[in-house]
Image (cartoon, rainbow, N blue to C red; front, side, top):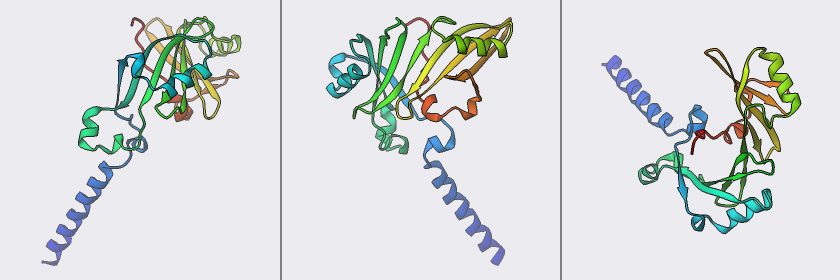
Length: 199
């Protein structure tokens, strides 16, 4: 009888622990926050967000606005992932060098950062190209992005290289030093947006 009681008590605690674990913040579980990105009209973007964009990038002409936030069905279900996370507005525009750039600004005007899509080697600083080519001789730089995080004032470069059927992605800091992907600041990674080549 004592063994049965012990078993029932143990099973109860295992079930309770599983329920609590399911409610832990997903970022701490190393999985992405459930978000959706959708095209929105300029008139639906808060003025504070537009003003912040102009302060960050004076005279920039936003081509498209997107919003990213918790999925609407998560909000209905009261999913913990949606609680306390402000919507993020993404502005697509050309930077002063003519490259597609995507800035991320919360509805409260908090600048998260931006990502600039460079054209292969074009736009990469010489020290970055030299560093990458030295580490990957014979590889061709297929595409690259500059990723900037506003709060830490840090930038990194994400470079995609190919050789025959081998594809490599490497991260490099502004000095040309390699960054292991697992060591790249989460604040930098949150500004990496998967954007199709054709939009």
